[in-house]
Length: 640
Image (cartoon, rainbow, N blue to C red; front, side):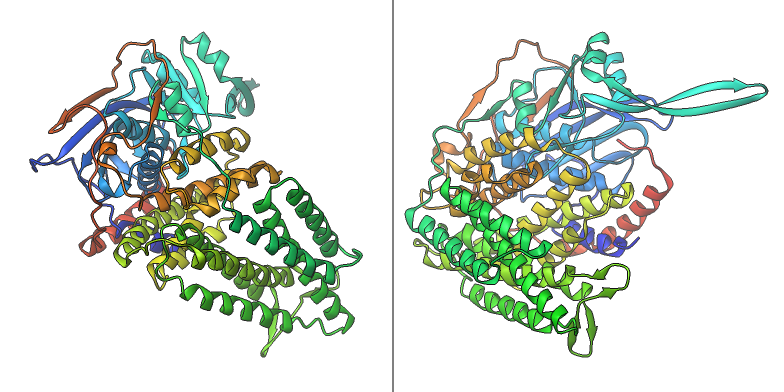
């Protein structure tokens, strides 16, 4: 398909950073602490019936962030991506640095091939339990759901069949993604018309909660990994009284940015005469309302986009009036603004810890500007060194390319704003080795998550992942660690947003869970750090669309996770990274079992992180794995 080659390249990068395809846990080193947890997982067999397999998760300390997976029988690439996402999400939710551990996932399933995203939630739950308490969940459960890097849970198929398999095995709790309680499945109806047998397929809605009750199984729906942990009585992070109030200098800077940006909009648009101008005015008014309500971040975002619409409207109007349809001037201004922002960001090669999130945000916004500029060049008509609006006798003038160029221009200014805040931050500078280690962690996750999203999109025919592919390619080709880290966060966030939209994640319920986790992790931060996440989380009410709200909260969480990897841990926090609370549990221990070797009870301890090695010797294995994975994926369709 269109993105198959890019998918292979991104997956190869993920494997080289590093993720061996098959391995068994090793206990040869005497200084290792190894904890394991075994739990059943549900799948749909080739016959169409639900079956239970076995998942064994092992966490090894100390490690270097490697993720190993062994499956029986064969596996597909999206299973590898799901395992790495599960390790990342579980580590983030537990408040630990993924680079301090190695993760082993062993799956045995009656299915012909192990694949698909539905084992992700089960892997994440078991991993989180080991990291947070060193024990398996005590409730007897089966979980199925797609896991995303921010810990949100996406929908999966085969729920009726999986629920029936869980009931047959005597499982007491069945955990599913929220929003799928009313499940649509296809029922086969056979009827005979004379000598002809006709098989019809018709959609049937099933209430899984009621159906589960009739089978003796409690069906619980969750929006996040945090929800699942609470439902199973696991320890969960305590938010406490974290203050989202940003420093006064940042709030003043944001107010000035909004005022200046909306001033430009006012000068360009007095009265709206077309759709572009109408949108500019709508966003301007919404931005002003947000300022009055103290929602400064959402006000700034709306002002930035309002300016893009206003600039595009003026450029299109002038191009039509001249009858040349030439918008070269707009393209050149956008390119100049992007180059100026790029130069501004070069001075951020060694940010302080308090300015790190702003520096990463500056690069993240620049990546978005780069994507918009690329879209502009692909949409506009180029003749020689000039750019023109496409004109059709049936559709008229197409202003899409002009809007993309204007967005690139406006976003470049937004990037410069964050670069300015980062340069003003005080504190000790972050070392180059720390930035390289951070970049390695985020690059690996960006590559894996992007490949995961792209493959799922291609398999299901759900388009719209082009932004994910582009941002991931920027991340793996970045020139310096800070740039790579900023681009990687945007790629991860874009992949999550794509999955939210394409697979209809229950955004409204997931927002609170993501915000709760973000606040819990942020409570360990230095008082002056996390400027961008504070502003974003405090302005969530300013985003009306549920997907946009969830994407904003998710991105803020990802920035907190990135910066938190550099927080200095006190020795007293070595075995308990977060203050936690435990939900009540009345059930007795279940077939989910935990084993420990060379370590005591409780969460695994922490030391200074090891640097990520580049596993060049896996190159041949990676190439062969990609080819075999693609071949198996094409031949076999039944998946977890």
